[in-house]
Amino acid sequence: MNKDLHQLIQISNLDKEIDALEPQIELKRGELDKAIRSKESKNRELLALEEEKEGIKLQISRNNQVLQDMGAKLESVYKKISEVRSERELKALNVEEEIAKEQIAQANQEIQRLEGELDHKFGMQKSIQTAIAQLDETIKSLEGKVNEDIEEIKAQQHEIFDEKQKLIVVMDQKLIGFYEKVRKWAKNSSVVPVRKQACGGCFIRINDRVYAEIIQSNDIITCPHCGRILYIEES
Image (cartoon, rainbow, N blue to C red; front, side, top):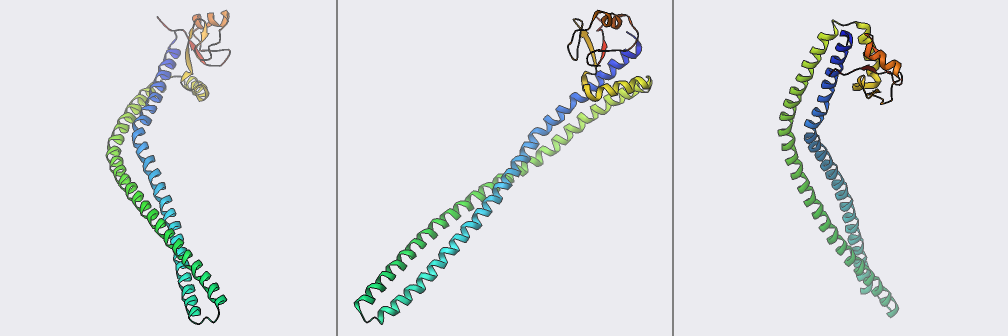
């Protein structure tokens, strides 16, 4: 194996090591992100409950207005009853009185129900606020540890990157440019071994002529099917 190809394999392996550390960063952030999402969800629940409470308060206000209107209606009816002059008028006023009393009873029942619902919403809010406070403590305790772990992983990435840069500066820059061009689409399968006479990237069989070139040539050989850089693994 020629020197250039050997160095390309080294660089490809270093790139793989750098990229392999990224999921570790996501994993470290996983629990923290979960707690943050939970807090955001609780805040949305809190806001929804506040809107529901405002709706209930509006309904209570409307029923109180009914009570006020029906109270005034009863006063008017009682005044008319005291001045009634015929049996027919009295019966009509009694009907109005019963209707007003029924509406007052219904409004009072509805207010009682709504106030119970409002108390329940207050209780739910209090429970959610307690959960948010607990999540705040969890987030605060996780942030320090997670940031410390992530910095450690990033330090490892920088260390590997520095090792890669040391290799790059002594290599043919045209070759590095070609490698980076392949890496743009092939990612960490830019430089792959040939196994059972097939490309280790696209897994398509390579013809005998190209396979022989890979074995014998000191040039950089690419897969005729996908364009990845190929090499034979040394035993």
